[in-house]
Image (tube, rainbow, N blue to C red; front, side, top):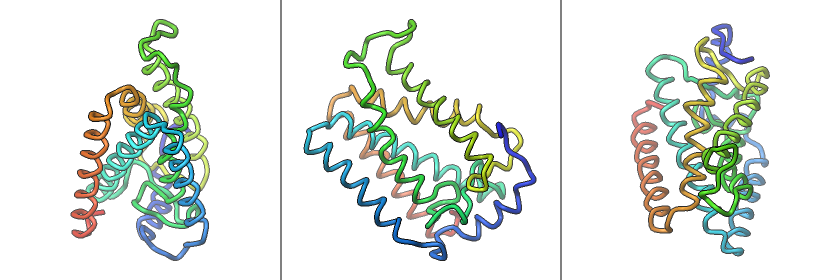
Length: 212
């Protein structure tokens, strides 16, 4: 399934009604959180601060996109991407479940382990940070094609699908992770901290107002 279909609007309506409902809550919520905490604690112990920065950079960009997606859903009636209530223990925002959020919290950290040591090295004539960002974006977009073919993930707009998500979403995700990986600790802290503050403010305001 490369693009969305309006035939899924009924499923999307069910998902909207289930945002932050505890009806499907189970203990996998706690287990996944524990695994993520362990991963970051382990990397911190190893002093892999660059990898941690890459992981948190992607995660902050991910949350900014999820907030925008939820706002789009509130304004237009349907989000660009939606998760189904049947597929998750908890829907955080219309397009992100707890399980997806935990995956994205470590995606940048995990994939940064594959980066060459030299940030200037070129592969196929392209800077390796850009090439790895594009490659990872393509990989994640391919997975999203599969997800969209299941009841777990919903695209309702015929013009939204694998190609738009590859270009507008996953490339920025991995560019943020891989370009910040080589920056100074000061720059890393500013980017991650600044975007975390923006995301927190948006969540507090928009959820309080009932927008998302």
